[in-house]
Image (cartoon, rainbow, N blue to C red; front, side, top):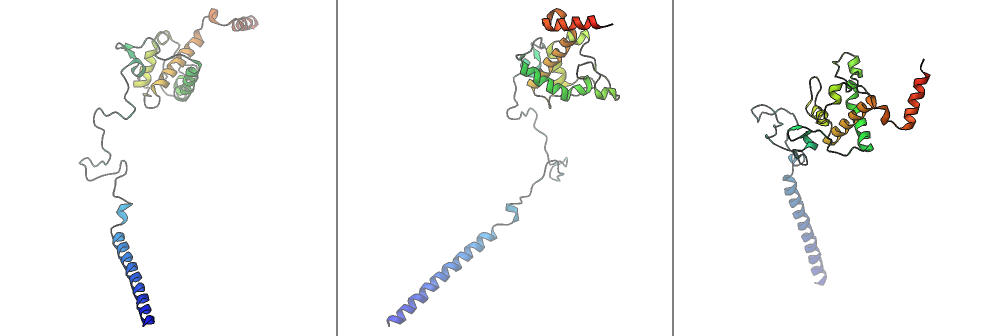
Amino acid sequence: MIRAASVRRAAGARGAAGRIRLAACVVAALLGAGCHSDMYDQPKLRPLEASEFFADGNSSRPLPEGTVARGQLHAPDAMHTGRAGGELAPDFPVAITADLLARGRERYEIFCSVCHDRVGDGEGMIVRRGFKPPPSFHIDRLRAAPPGHYFDVMTNGLGAMYHYRTRLSPEERWAVAAYVRALQWSQHAPVADLPAADRGALERRKDEEP
């Protein structure tokens, strides 16, 4: 009798384990049936892909008027508009430092020198290849132009020049404007403003000329 009871208990245990395994398989099958490819490969439209949903056939929608990207809302001050009191800013809204001029030179030589040349005379490489030449920065009109003029032209473009507001930040535009001023000064600096060593070098060079 004891042996028979043990056999029945063992058989019952095996049956319970089997039922648990069966239940687990059923649950896994039900869960698996609820998951399909759309869970990880969801229907979507890629940027600029055609769409039949919108009347114009474009999946990429235009931004609502007045939309400003996060972090791109700027105050209407001279730093971001190049104007003060409705007029072109007569002064720089940033401190003119060696670092600012170095940054301005770097940006100028990348974006501006192809037209304006490295010294600002308007004879850059693409001008030599037939592109319309810009005016030299060293003419009286541009030497007298306020700093805001250069910022405004870089922001909005002028004539054949494309705008650079999407390529140069406001800080970089002011840095380039400061470097243009440095170029202008380099070609028209009064001798009296030069350090004594530089004045002496010029005088020696002058004496050596035939």
